Image 1 (tube, rainbow, N blue to C red):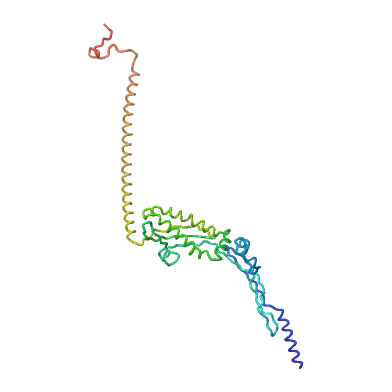
Image 2: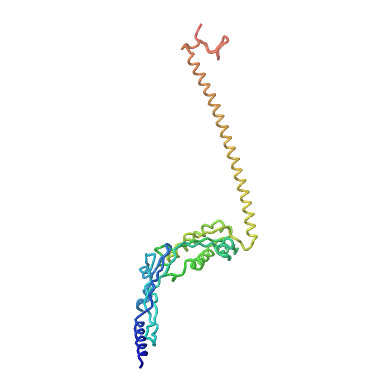
Length: 316
């Protein structure tokens, strides 16, 4: 073997030996956690016997991290070997998974109008009254995830977003409750008991989702019902106008009655004042007469040479 070939062989062997002990650079990886987020660090490796624990709410609670920046550790995974230079092939992969739960409030406006609702689709909730009068109602809903409930939410919904749950499960339960409550009332009664319907709805929906890590802060009706039959709305409007006119007339009648009572009271007060004045004058005249009396009784009661009832005075 020539000297040149020997040198090349030695260089190749040295290079192969050097490369065999080298791996690619393990670049640091970080995950930033925003103020409205809660992060969970989940190990990606573990014993098979511990997999059941990974599915528990208690495990997720322990995996919650308070820091706002998480460094993700890596592990080297072999993918083969270069037979020419005996180099170990592989890559760094994350040793943990960082799951982030977004907790900030999410709102929805479910309307029939593309210009007013959250979506341009008709998302009003349809229902029927006891007598099968069909209508659509507009709802507004706001929900959030409290810090203490983040693990519960993650366990229940497997890292789905609050927006997804609000548009699916929460909407479906609200619709189911609303339809059930409205079917108990005739239309006239339903219009008078809207708040009772919403009270029953809230008392079911709010605690149900609180147990699943979601705090619903608002569930409300927005605007009037939209009826499938436009004549229903026309009849309601006419009844409303009639009732308003009747109320106006009643208010006017009440005003006139109260004025008449006030006038009568004023007359009574004036008459009483006149009577009091006359009585006062009589008392004043009596007082003056008493002041002028000298203590001598008159010799006769009467005048014009006689006495009243011709009673003698006792004088001759």
